[in-house]
Length: 291
Image 1 (cartoon, helix red, strand yellow):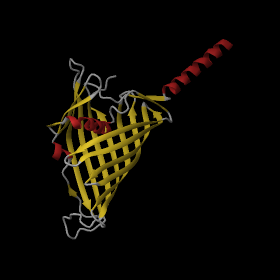
Image 2 (tube, one colour; image 1 turned 90 degrees about the vertical axis):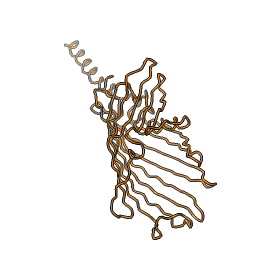
Image 3 (cartoon, helix red, strand yellow; image 1 turned 180 degrees about the vertical axis):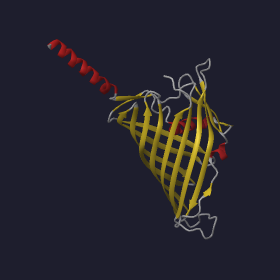
Image 4 (cartoon, helix red, strand yellow; image 1 turned 135 degrees about the vertical axis):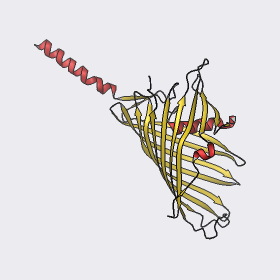
C-alpha cells in the first residue's frame, strides 16, 4: 500500500513539475529561416504638436500659418515577408513587398486628407537582401535601387527593429527577467553629415500561456545631429507588449506607445516638436512554420 501510494505521489509530483519547468523560461529564436512567408500588418496613429513661434526666420508655406501647429496622422500598411530555399553557399534570399497601404493627415483639427504612402516612394518592392551562412544580412536593394555599402548596417538595424528578427536570437529569458538590447546606429544624411542614434530596448517576460510568451517592452532613444553648427536632438521613450509564439518562433503581435521630443535650433529661436504615437504590428505565417 505504501509502495503504491509512494509511486502515485512521485508520479503526480513528476507530472506537476513538467509544465512548471517547461514554462519557467522562453528561448527566443527570432532569426529568419529559409522557405517561409509571413504577412505583416502595421497600423500607427501619430499626434504631434510643433511650435515654431520663437523661430524668427523659419520658412512658411502660408503667411497665416499659426503656431503651435497640431498634426495628426493615421497610417496602415500590409507587407509580405518571404525567404527562399537555401543556396549552395548556405545563404538564402529575403524580400519584403508592400501589398497595400493608406495614410492620412489632419492639421489643426481640419479635414483629413490622404498622403502618399511608403509604396509611393519605394514602390511595391520594398526590400531585398541575402542572409549569409554566418547569419549576417547583406542588403541588395531598397525600393528597386541598389543599397550603398555605407548604408547596409543601418538598413539591417532598421529591418531588425521593424520585424523583430536578429536582435533576440538564441536568447533565453526567465519569468520576470528583463533583457536589454542595445541598437547603436550611424545614419548618413546627404550633404549634412551623420545622424547618431542610440536605442535601447527592454524585454521582460511576464507570463507564458497557451504556448505564447507574453513580454512587456520598453524603449529609450537618443538621437543627435549637427547641422550648421547647431545640435539637433531627439529623445524618446516607449512602452508596450510583445507576444512570442514559442513553437512557431515568431512574434504574432506587438504594440508600443511612444513619446518623442524634438529640439531643432534655428536663427533667433528654435523649433520644438512633441510626438505621441501608438503602433501595432501583427505577423501571420502564410505557410506552416516547420521547426
